[in-house]
Length: 99
Length: 393
Image 1: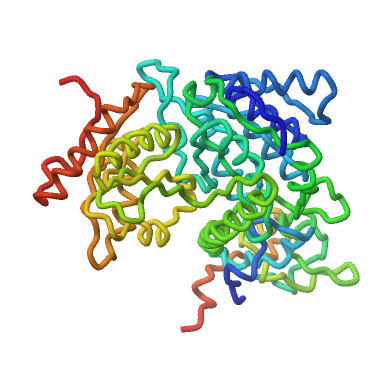
Image 2: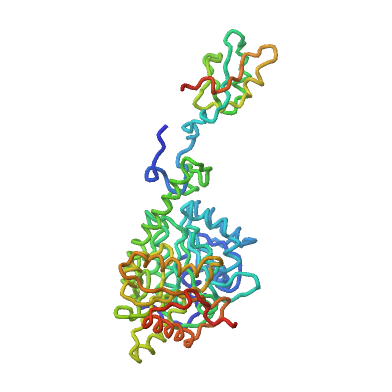
């Protein structure tokens, strides 16, 4: 994301429109990435309920993915996934890095 | 022509506030500024103003309430001194950084300890880097005139900064002077309606004030404040022009007195300007080429203008009414000396710390400074770069 210069932003650190936290890509904070095993997932949607960043993407009542632009990698989804299911593993972000 | 009155500085400020009729005032009493809000409270009680007067429990709360009211979209004013300003410290930065054009009268008083209620500039000089515009007044008339202009300066587009109007405690605040009050309608026409950019009370357009601002944007917001101060320079002169048309009284960044052909001069701010002027008159009558520069605007600092004005001097003494402990000399000295650094042939500059805790500055004290300047002008030797004026050994 291109960062704006001082002439392009509102004065005083003001945020002049509501609901713009969506534009703030907190995905770069992540050190662990949730990896979901589609074969194990029972689509109980507990991860979707608990995700503090609304980053679990659900379509037609089924989990289809994770919004990696906003997921901070907190691991709550993996923790809340029922013990008998264990569909989500937190994998170190370094393993996805492209060098 | 307005009304000629005999008035103290504090009452003149209260009168200006009545004429300005701000939306909100939040204040806590402290000597020597107490009288301002006391008198203004009378105006509120008598229904002469429509202002909401918020009686708070401390100066920290006073500035906090002013910040809230200004962010909400109101025209906001307050007044304080010394410890009161010190207690506002944290919030001074919030007001300036949030770009809220609050106008505050600071009746200058020494800082504790030991306890002292009298004038020096330690309070406002300590706040010189807080992001507020600072205008220093020479007398009650100028304090009154400065306060009215401050309303326009602070709210100007491209500026949007809070303004401190400083006046010397007791010397100006409690001395009765002959001065002119302008007509109420003229003042109202001059200041115009308050302009708020992002008022919190406009619920159709919600905004967030004071969000977290980290490594990615904090620097950009500080850079904006630098620009606002730069813009303020032009605006201060523009408003002064308009005010001159209204009142006949002209103001700039500073007032020059016998400076054009002067070889030696004193630079001072506040009420000492008048005292120094009397000494210049005496010396001029004796054929000494003495001059004076009375600095009015300290923030934004008029660097180029000062350099231009002082470039032909042989020797200059900067008088500071506060010390900067551990630095070499007072704050005004350091900045003025830096302003002269790039001149082809800069004058020699020395510094005197004077008037701390209200210590009187007599004509003879100022005369001694000019004598020292004459000595340096003739032999080129500075014996003491920084010295205390009127201190007992």
